[in-house]
Each structure stands twice: as structure tokens, then as C-alpha cells.
Length: 522
Image 1 (cartoon, rainbow, N blue to C red):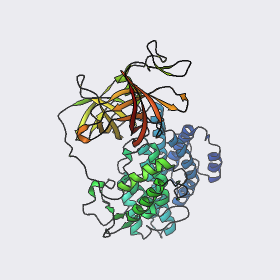
Image 2: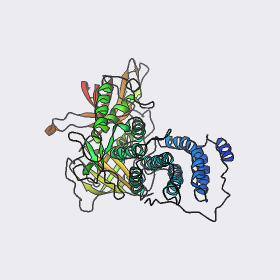
Image 3: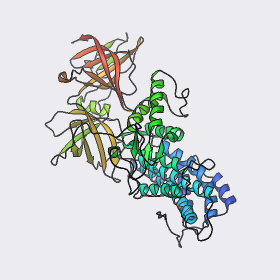
Image 4: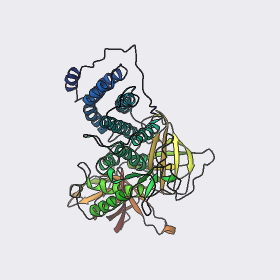
């Protein structure tokens, strides 16, 4: 029997509830779509009233069909506002995130009520087609809540996965799990999309990767198969359909409760996609959906290939250290100002030649940088997990470089944010990978043709001889172009180098090799 979390009727609604389809359709057409937040507020209020008003299942279903495409349009507009958002969010971002989640929650409540009414009918039997469609719509709506939470770095609602497991089990028991009706996916496909999205490990993704993952799943999730048992030689994951938890990478070798997600066909498709993208073919030419861009798609498909192929294992054992804290500064520019609180040393004379400025610099003095304090929750040879309650919006994102040190006497080391979560409106959790025990500030000026651009703050990452690791440059993300020459100032040296192979790219930086071919000490 289905036991879904729904809101009952509210006898004291603040405003009358409109239930006439024609009037609702006309009102939906007049909504101020140029202002997504205002439109979302009106939709949340309307759906709240509708979901707490006594309605028959057929009437409720018909009205939700009117709201659904409008909600999809507005949530799409709201989501774009998180393209450059980080944590902790600004006040406006928090408000937009709350609206996004509330809108998806209200749509899901409506479909829960319809499905419960159909499943618990006293007389007769509900239409199997309608039951399959509503089950799929509800699973898709719960999946949209999942996506909204990942986009806004907020915890999933309690009971979300318990309901998704339960709805799919109900569809299976009704022999409707594989029935697709109209433009709705089958319940099994909607469920598989949510499972695969969770297995993609969204906390390790930035906005572009989250959006690309959803686009990929919308087109190719059907390649994954839900089966009763694993197939020999196939990769896949056990699905624990009891409780309130998503599938887990670290449970791949554990016994399963009668449900298995076979990802072998998906793995093969991703492998071919990676090879074709590496060879220079465009995403559109190889059949990826519109909106998937080449460089992001290649990086994402390589990641998904790993995430959906096998269970994960930790490279290093974690341990919980005694109470300890670290200081943290994020971003290439901020780390550079922290280490080198001087203005750019380059200036151009009339001959457009590079000079080391012995006079007043051409740029104003940089703003001071203040480190924030974080508590270490666990540590390992490769990285550490931190938590804190920063008192100002830091706009931290996955892929941001970090300077870290234990206390005022320690040297700054270099790391990168690999995952982010928010425990609540104040507490932020970070997963940090260590990149280097040392970092040095440099100024870099690319040499493009005969013109010389302004210098950019960058970081030199010294190599580790024991690891046979050469020096590398960490550049802001807009700067890199393979084979390009650049002038570099690292007091007291000025030298010229050529950008080499890129070792890593994130939305915030490029970590590259370089070849030094002129070194002059002034």
C-alpha cells in the first residue's frame, strides 16, 4: 500500500482556489515570465491552494496537466540563475533556490494526491494507462526536486528516496513499470534517471556538468536496465529499495534486495562517445542532445564513464584528527593577493615593450585578503573534509583553488574544492584535494601576435622531485592557449615561457605544463 507524504486539506486558505480549467489556462498565459521569481511565487501560491483543496482525482489530474509545462518553463529560467552561484549563497540566491524547490515540491504533492486517490479507490479499478502515467510524472517530479537540491547545494528532503523506491515498487507490482504513455517516460525509466543522477555524484559537479548530465540522461538513460539480478560480465549497482537512501558506489559488492541497475550498455555508449569527442567530432555529429558543448561534454563523459562503470574504492584511508582547524582563501586572484600584496609590476612604454616598473604601478593597490577559519572533519593523504559557518557569502564553487594553512606560523599549501554540501542555511561542508605543499605568486602576460595584453595574476606550483614532478602554472580559466608564449614576472626574475599541455581544467583554472626558454634576472 502506498504511504506518501502529502498535505491534507486546509480549511483556512488565504484566498479562493480557482479550479476552472479555462480560467486557469488564461491566467497562466498572462503570468510575467520576464520575471521568473515573481512568476514562481504566484505559481507556488496557486499550487499550494490547489493541493489543499478538495478535488477529485480526474479533476486534479487535468489541472496539473495545465500547470506542468508552465512550471517547467519557469524552473528552467530559475535554474539559469545558479550558473555562477556558489556557497554560501547570497540572500537573493537563497530566495530563488527556495522558490525553485517549493515549486517542484508542490507539483510532486499534486501528483502524489492523484496517485493515492487512484491506488486507493473504493470501487472499480483505475485506468492502467493513467496509473502508469501519473506514477512516471510523480517520479519525474521527485527527480526534479533532487536536481533542484543539487543545484542549490541543499540537503534532499527527508523521505524523498523512500517515496521514489516505493512508487517504483508499486508500478512493478501493478505490472506498469515499463509502460510509457504519451510524452511521459515509463515509471522504470524515470526511476532509472534518478538513480543514475545520484550515482553521477552531483556534489562533485559544477553547474555546467549538472545541466549536461541531465541532458545526457534525458536521451540515454534507457540504455541502463533495471533487472532482478546482475548479469555476469556486466557492470552495475545494487539498489537497496528499502529505506530512504540513494544508490551507493561503495555498496557495489554488497548483496542486493532483488533489484539491480545494469549499466553495461550505458558504459559502452559513453566509451564510444569519449573516443569520438577526443578525435574532434562535435557533440551534435555524434548524436548528443542540443545544449551539450564539446569540452564540457568530454570532461563529463569521462567522469560518468568512471562513475557508472563500477563501485568506487578509496585510494587512501581517512581518519578523524584531533580537534583542528585550517585557514582558507579561495580563488586564483585572492590567493595571489594573499601571497603578493603588490600591484602588477608590468607597464608598457611607447614602444610597447615590457618593463619592470620601478615607479608607481599602473594598477591600484589590491584589496586586502582575509582568510576564513574551517574545522577539519576528516583527513587523508590526498585531501581533507572541512566544515564551517562563514559569516559572509564566499561564492565557493566546485573546482575553485584554495590556499590552506594550519595556523599563522605554517606555510600556505595549495588545494582544490572537489565537492560542496550545505548542511543547513549556515553550515558548509567542503571536500578538498591537496595539489601541492607550496605555491608562489607570479604575474603572467600572454604574447598574442605583436600586441601585449595586461598581466594576469597566476600561481606557480613547484614540482616535487621525489615524484618526478615538474613545475606547473595554475592560470585563471580565460588565459590558456596551448603553444602560446607569455612573459612572467616572479621577483626577482623575469622570464619567457611557452604554455604546454593542460593537466587539469576546472571552471576556475587551468593547471598546465610549460617550457622555459628565456630567463633574465634584473
